[in-house]
Length: 165
Image 1 (cartoon, rainbow, N blue to C red):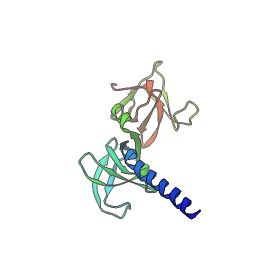
Image 2: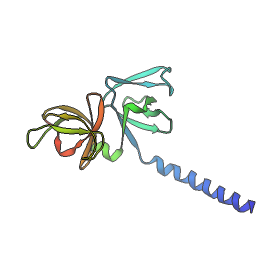
Image 3: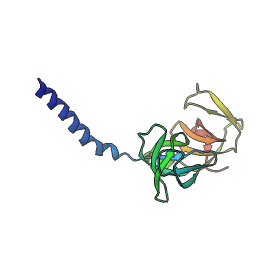
Image 4: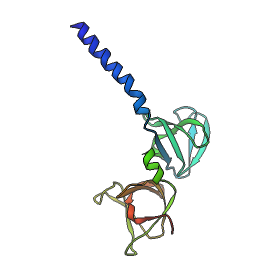
């Protein structure tokens, strides 16, 4: 009985170890969504040395996401360190091709567009944005896109975003 239990545990451990490299093939990125700048730290604590400052919209590669409030990242200038999780917006490598940069609100009828907490028409409205309002695109989706505006992250229908004013 003990041998069967041991073999079952050993087999489960082997499967876990074999599957880890497959998980790491899915590169994840994040964008900084801080009001001003976000510091890259040497350790996962605000008391540690700041080794870089990154503005909203900066794309970073997520190296490890298992800490409670911190994420280990690699920045565009090649530095690795820790950033505070609540100031990052995650998206996958496929989404990153379509995402990022400045966008402007557009409206078919010329009226304001709802900026929502969730990617849903039932999501609570954070604000109403007028056509021409400048926003930062975090994640582009077919129906809904995640944006950063005025220090807040939320969702807007993708059809109301434009690259030009």
